[in-house]
Structures are given as structure tokens and as C-alpha cells.
Amino acid sequence: MRQKLNQRGFSILEAVASVFIISLILTTAVSIVINVRNQTEATNERIVATEVASRIRDDLVYNNAYDDIISWQNGESVIVTSTTCVSLNTPFDCAIFQYESNGRVYDDTMTLIFLAPTTESGFYQIVHFEIVIEYYPHRFLTIEGIIYE
Image (cartoon, rainbow, N blue to C red; front, top):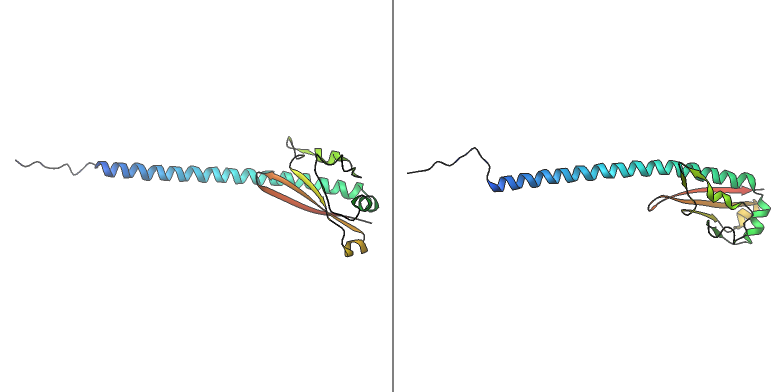
């Protein structure tokens, strides 16, 4: 007697392969959604950090005199953080590290860099500075500014 094989069902190998393919597709879809979400969040944080850095730049430019900054620098590059601001006797108020936006204060993730004067900047009486903010893990924003006579 001969038995007929059921040709309508799946073998175990086909079932395992289909489960593997479906799980691969779902894993890829979830990772894409997570990456898009992280990118959107980073973009939003960059917008806020840009606003904060612009306010700090404007505060430094409009509330400080060229002569005060250049004499404080003493011809050298100076890096200012929220922890070193008071000890460096800065000519500007250290409260600039306390700007808040969307409930976040960028004090620990912000650095002010006053670049060393060059021959040209001395001739034109310009102090160059940079504001560097880490707005998202391992993502930095740099805004430049100048204080002039």
C-alpha cells in the first residue's frame, strides 16, 4: 500500500525559515524607527542649543568691551567652563552658563574658547571666541563670535 504525501502543508524547515525572515524584517523595522526617533530628538536639541548659544554670544558681544577682554586674555587663548569661570576672574558674568531653555541648562556641556590674538586681530582690534555646546551625546555645536572696538 502506498501512502500519499500531503502536498498542501509546510515542512518544518519552511516554517523555521519563514519565522526567521519575519523576525529579521521586524528587527530591521524597529531599528529604523528608533534611529529616526533619535535623529528627530537630536535635531530638536540642536535647535534649542543654537538658540542658547546665540543668546550667550549676543550677551558677550553687547555687554563686554574689547579692552577688558583683551587685557584679561593677556595674549593667550583662554578656555572657560562653568567650573573654571570664577577662578579665571573673567570680565563677564559667569551667569551666562546658567541660560535655560526647555528645562535644560547647558552649564556642564558648554565651553567658551577665547582664541589667542593674532597680528590681524590685534590690528583690527577684534577678539574671536567660540561657544561649543554638546547638545546630544557626542554631537557638538560651535558658534563663533567677535568682540571689537
